[in-house]
Image 1 (cartoon, helix red, strand yellow):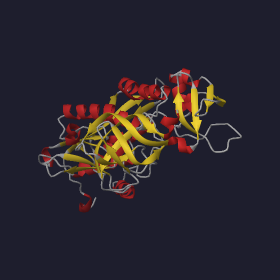
Image 2: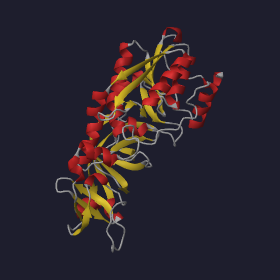
Image 3: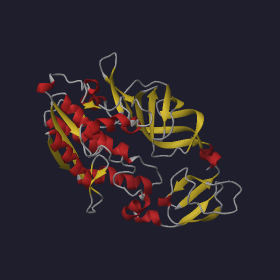
Image 4: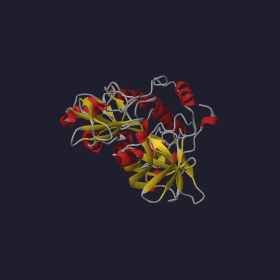
Length: 372
């Protein structure tokens, strides 16, 4: 590997005396992190979390991958000549992520399980294990940047490549965790990461990226939730904003706020979208797109990595653009109405490229809230 790809891991002592733990998923990203860590001359240890999908026989790792990926992670570690640990976290993952995911859906909310996983099983537990090993840091394959500010403290910034940025899912990272974490891929495009993997002779160099939530690899979220919370599959009424019955649905589990697909009602003057889910009565409230307009969102459980400033950039969905907003300590007010904002989603706040905080949307207000 050429000298211009050397990554500074910010070690407080000489690399020859340091130890780097790498969270390894078996994918190309974390595998290249292991390569970059080994290049420093430090002792490197790979760690994979082995999880089980709600009691089924399929093993999964804690970095959004399946049983084959554990083998791939071990293969990379063997090639690099580094130790590899596999930790069984079935119970923690099930209660901390899968059950909470199902509960949120059952409550008519739209959960973000990757954020829950990062806040709990991944960072909290992996950091704890890395510290037990006497590591100087824990390195992951996330596409975000760790920048040292003028005050000498670590800051969390968006990944340099906008198409790969994963900061939205890391808003729950604490300042203490950030001091210990390293993100070597934050300045690299994916094409360069694959090139480095090929250069290192890794078998995972061309391995496809995971496209779904790790515990729902086939994308059938409804199927999972129905198995865990059968009541969500009960049929109910589809009503308009005035409460008039328009039709029937086959379970609220099949819908999220802002969804248009699956609303089988003919003869309507405009397309209809889900604007509210009422799980207790099993009602699905639908309306025109204008009814999805949201002017503000109340944000719960906010974690701050920066200053609690009033004028911010906000992102309320992982694939959404950041928008101008004002923060008053409880409510996030958008300068222009946002659409498809739902309780349960994450609201992440930025100062340009720097992530300064985030939390979970508890409720919204705007056009649809007034019409309900």
